[in-house]
Length: 487
Image (cartoon, rainbow, N blue to C red; front, side, top):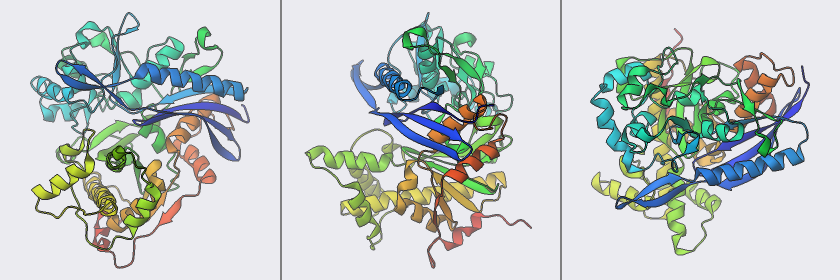
């Protein structure tokens, strides 16, 4: 047993990536940023349109540079773990990347839905994979991908980077569970669903679990340091770091997207779950992340990006302060509307949505921000009510983790609309979950063999969340009906 040590968490999001050092000892876990770099879609002209891709080669270059700096600064570096967003993949033939991975917001993916549903009906698809229907799920992407027939391997983004670091191909199970190709009950690849893409069964690599060793850095990268599989879907890692000391909680992993859900032992594959468009995704230690994808702070960041196009800078903190001071009613819009999916002028789209639905659009930037955050909080509350109804799980507290936990107005509005206390933090939940799974695998700080609850206790000892209570007299007080009685 090792008392302490440092590990590197490579944490890749849809707008940025980081290399973070985590140090775990008996007092808790600490993190330090070693490298931070931008990430985002690249538009390339293809077949008469602009197609969105990920510059995964540049992403890899930044990761390698960050890891070299980490090794230079931390001689005790014991392991590396990678997490990223879900569903997107690279295609390989004889180990060579065939092209830049498509971005999940690219419109091409929608053509794959009909292809798959012609072979497997929507209800059978849900009974098998338990996934919320999203047109960019990997199963649909592969069915619409003209290059897939040329490939002999498909690797999800963190698995692709792991392959380039170690030379070992594998599919980490939590991220594999987001593809729509994994059987929700057996947690193995489903041959029927793979066949529905029209692709060969051996396109996908062997499945591995969080905590399994992947391989060692290639000699060209310095060698010596093992790469350990973690919950490579970033939300799977974030949920590990929810500092919950009781079972009756819900979580919101809030960032570009918002993942609103609860943790279960087994999937829920009922007609009610499908009708509610809830998803059963894999968690660390075989847990089920029963949740819904809800639009997130993407709506706010796209709005800010639009406002900055005239060359002016936007002070987001000041804008949030102004939004908190808005007293006039603002429209609450459907954040799941498809018009808000693609990059573009978000304020104009919100105004257009309001016009179509007979509502007055926000008049100022502060009102737009308040409208976005009120709409997100309303979506969170509605989603939690649905999840409680479908699962029968008691929810007495909501944990908000990730970047959105810093947004004080959003957290307060979430408390008001759900009628439940909100505990906000940690901000770096994904990195902490990544680090702790590595630490357990290595036996650092006595964590070898520790339960998921024990890992969360480490977070609870390290981070004190900020508490938001529902405002007295809030219009949302009746929303306490999302809590089921213990009687």
